Each structure stands twice: as structure tokens, then as C-alpha cells.
Length: 109
Image 1 (cartoon, rainbow, N blue to C red):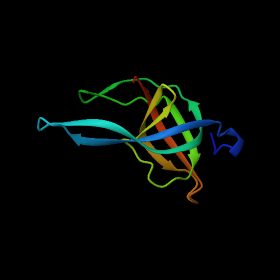
Image 2 (spheres, one colour):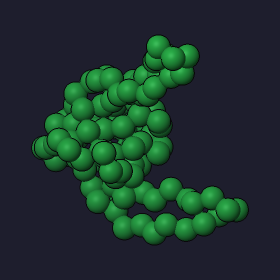
Image 3 (tube, rainbow, N blue to C red):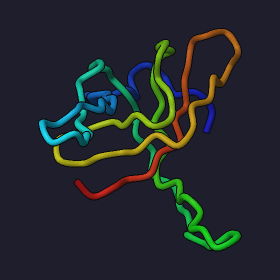
Image 4 (cartoon, helix red, strand yellow):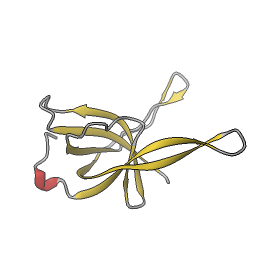
């Protein structure tokens, strides 16, 4: 799919970033912090899970298109209501800083 038209950006997604915090017992815990809210197009993909060198390969389940936004990177996630999409890779599609295509995997909350 080539870059979508602006009208295709119909889903309001929340971009979240993992934040590591210390607990009172000397350990740490991971929480998710709101980074930004943006309009996006969520496009389902077909994928399969496989094993590579004794590790499970990530499965791309959706491509998420959005207007260029600095700071979007793997290890972040998108939230769409109760649905969560882990960002696996971020591609600048046209080289003109207009569009980002995020390869994502839907995860259970």
C-alpha cells in the first residue's frame, strides 16, 4: 500500500512509552506513559509466527500509517481503546518527512 490519503487517518491512537520506576523494595517496575495522541490508518496484515535459532520471530499483524512525527520508535506502543499495538519498526516512507509506516503486532493487555 502506498501512503494513504489524509481522509484515511480515521483512528485516534494514543502513543505510549515505557517508563521504568524504582519500587520501595529496591526493584523496579514498568509502566506506560502517554506520549502523544494522533490520527492514523490501521491496516491489517497477514502473518505467521515461526522459530528462528530457538527464538520466536515477531509477527507483523498491522501496519499503522501516520503523518510524520519525531520520536516514534520501536519499543513504544499504540493504544486504540482496549487494543494494544507493539511497534516493531518505524519506516519513513517517502524520504520527505511526510509519512511514517509502523509495523506493529497486536498484543494482549
